[in-house]
Image (tube, rainbow, N blue to C red; front, side, top):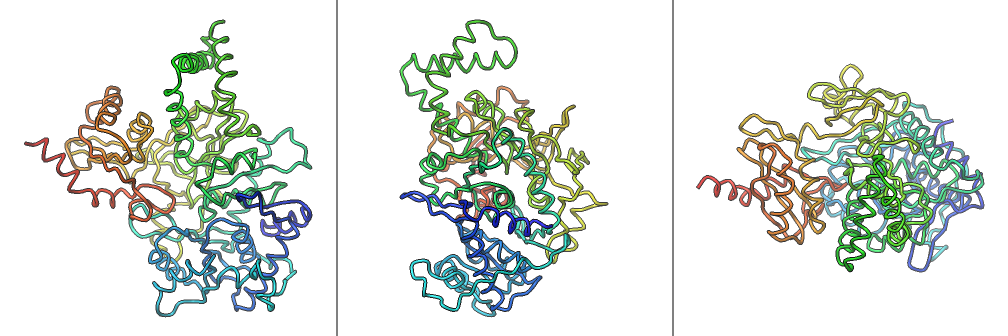
Length: 559
């Protein structure tokens, strides 16, 4: 039984249980298993009448919602290859992806998104139906009388059939379409489902996992978590307004949810900034409690440490944890390495942070922390059945049933990436004696100074940012230069940047020290073309955009 059939089976078993719900100001908009199957049937009827068949590609352009999940499952149940798209991305970029994959149709959330595609695809555009046309207008049940429910089981799918094409974020060059097969996804759901089972050990089988979700479904890791919730006994609460994330999180009371390091690091720096504004005795309790926790963890604690930690936990730590969620069993973190200090901050509060590592090409995941045995600062061991080792220049290479079959219509790029069955990740790493991996940099991001020294910018950027809670981004540059410089964005002062860089430089060898910097008050954004669709730095574009400002730093040092 493949994972699409598993979804159908689970939805039937959850006919009267809430499986998906959207978080709104007035409460929740719920969908039971039976209601989801009804909506999936409607969508499948529309897809068939539109003439789509197995192997056709269909774009899915929308923000997260119950209906996004419905369309995704309906398309896969018909054997149509789903091409998920990020609703905040520039329409011209989206059209390039849709043309590249030869989309036969694009399902759009609303007329605004549809018009953006239509205005940038003036000739030969495929049909662009909006969700109301596909599923009927919920405010007017009679708006689409031709909508019929298709109650058939999913069509037969082999493990080699392609389920989706997810376009990579394109930090350099044009995005490539990553094909993921039915077998890839099914294997990954089995592995991640096992880990979630470990996390929820002790819960009764009749009690569904409570899961909160705010990351876009169009990203591979986010999609895998959503599919997990559809194939196990779970209730997934979908964030509908990132500006109200804290309230939505509190209302949803999840057991776990997926995060990116940026959010967790902002929570940590935000808490510590608030503590710094409190009276001196509160600051002292927090500081002593934190130091005592570290000594306890290292096995150096005495009786006073035990008392100081208990006092801090009672007066401060417990209230912070309550705001994050009293029912939290773990925060799951992926997309980029998380600072060890941030992971330990949450551990101090009594909240596990479990890391995962992977790329779209590895069906989102290669490693996962074991909930019962994990090492802060590392991303866990390779999941069962997957081999990982270090190649040249400490590059992580991987092989296993999670490795994608190739890039859409790019055989040369596929051949350059998968060599002798091993996928070359482009990430640099190291592994400890227990098999736990650490990500230390990205090969393509390496800065090569004119002295010949190679510098991975990410660890330096991370350390500088940790000293400046109000900074939005830190970008270290210096390729083919004599020293490193940095771009710092956000509401920061020269004094703050000076202090942060000085503190970080003191622990670095001379060639890794940042000598000059430029402050840009406006943060880098996806809309400006300086961040990828999933928020990663477009380093070449940033270097080009700020060329004059950075060049001025180097000129001033020569004069």
